[in-house]
Each structure stands twice: as C-alpha cells, then as structure tokens.
Length: 278
Image (cartoon, rainbow, N blue to C red; front, side, top):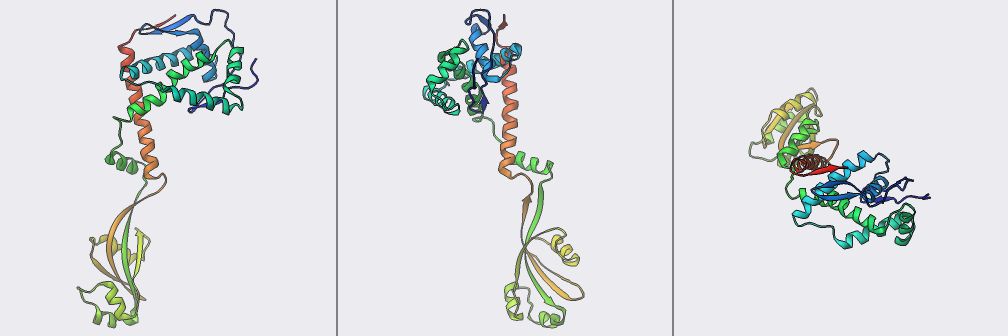
C-alpha cells in the first residue's frame, strides 16, 4: 500500500492506487503495429490516469503508441535530459527523491525503468505532438477577427477632437472658423481648448453623436443644442474588444485546432495500423 502518490507531471496527475495483478507483469495486453503494450505499461497507465478501468487505459495507451510511432517516424524523440528532469519534478512534487519514487513503485510491482518507458511515450505523444502540430497549425488574422465577431466582442470606437463652444460665443466662432484651420487653432483664437476623446456610439449628446458616426475619417462636423455649439473632427476608428483579449482568443482557437488535427491524425493512423487487444 502506498501512502502518498506521485503528483503532477507535465499537466497530468499520477496517482498511486492499490492494484491487484495476479498474472506476470510483463504479459502482452495489446500490440500496435506489432509493438507490444505490456501489462506493466497498463499498470503504470492506471496509476498515471488514476483509474482501475483497464479498457479505458488500454484505449489511451493505444493512442499514445500510435502517436509515438508516428512522431518517431518523423525523427522526433523524448530527450534523455527531459526524462531526467521529469523524474526530478516527480520527486520534488512528492517531497522525496528519485530513490524514494523507486521504492513506491517497487511496492506496486513496478520499477523506474517501467516509469521511464511510460513517460517516454506519454511525453512524446502529448508535448511532442503539440510541438509537431504547431509547425503546421496556425490561427490566421481573419479567423481571429471572425471569432471576435461571433462572440460579440468587437465594439467600434472613434477617436475625435472636440471643441465645445457656449451658444453666446457662436458669433465669435463664425468669425474665427476657417475650413483650412485646425481645431486647435480655432480653439486658441477663442481662448478655449480641444478635447481628445475615444467614444463609442451613444456616448455623446444625441445631436453630436449622430454627426460623429455619420462623418468620414478626417471630416469636421458641427452640431448644436440649446446651450452649446460642437465642432468635432474624426481622427480615426478603432475596435475595442471586451471580454477575452485577442491573445486569449488566439490561444483558444489554436488549442481547438490542435485538438481537431490530433483527432484527424489519430483516425488516419488507426486506419493504417494493425492494432490487437489481447
């Protein structure tokens, strides 16, 4: 009986649970393209995935073997130094040493060699596959923009220069305003200042809001109400994203595309492979 389990490794959790195997540990339980999956692999998988469901674990091991074989055929492998680092991480997570992990495994009828064999395939079939697929799977700008629109997170905003003049100064405004003058120059002549604002639809007073969103970029518009005359120049238009940031959306899209590509690859590998469950 193991008192505490081996904890987090590369995003997975390895729980040591008590298992009962009456047969020899090295019995072949399945094969993928004539490469055996041993009962020790099955037992290690049950510990790693924290389940006693043998069918579920064998199914997962078959997937790992298929992906591992595919990646090896592409010249990839799990670096020995990564294996060593992973074992050290397991030990640290359990506040023990690699030798301590070996003793816990021995109590389950397993060895460090069994663990390394399991991790070699698990790491390559997960982290290695992700690195491989990221070479071909990308998120385009158009896909990102479409995702923003689908989730309703795009909000247009306009950058404007705004000069507000009291109605009593309307006559003076007519005198100093010239089409070729900038709003800053007009404001200076009036002893006033120009405000620079980023506004969404509906944020300005109604009469000005309509003119600002009707105008072309660079155009100066006029509006007035009972108390003020408004001059506004539309400087630029941007898009404000609410909710998830563009980078978060990009990561989410990439993750979904990677998972879909992984599913397609597995389906293809299954069709072209010889798999036997004993």
